[in-house]
Image (tube, rainbow, N blue to C red; front, top):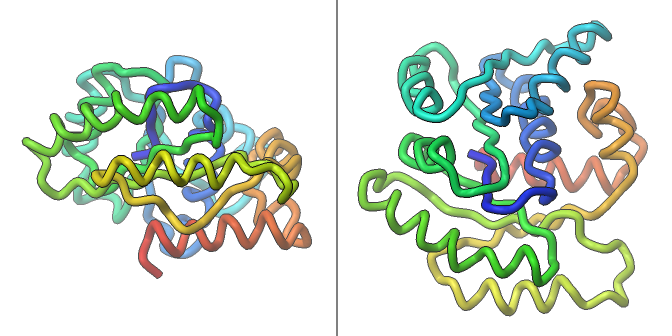
Length: 211
């Protein structure tokens, strides 16, 4: 599950890039888009229109359908990535009950970090039902200028919430991600010579899928 309580944290970018990498490696992944502004589904349709391989299977599900459809398709796909919109909702809570891992992307800004308390409450409630749930935070859209100290400050605040595991991978704000997205591609597919962006996604993939 790629989710959160705030919009604009890059959930769709993370979900689609991970989906492309995982599908390329295993060929058995379903991307579940729960947003009524279906950016992830639109990305998949652009991908098909442009004949980009591998094809990424995707569906749209909302509210209670997120949990029921995920369980129904449990055996059909090796992996499923659920992307939820940025707010506390029935679909987010339902997805937390069926996911093995949840990744909350956060920008290293105070507005995003203020959601940690609410996220902590959400995962505590979900954990009472889903004892397999592993909870991770991902610092996303970090400034590329090392002079900016936001990441260090974010890490200090995150350390106050022991329920969360902070991923080692740091994803920076790079124009390559936006250019790849509008073409229905992952950043690895679109601009492999952008070594920093490619390395970030590949490192994230290894962490998420333990490879």
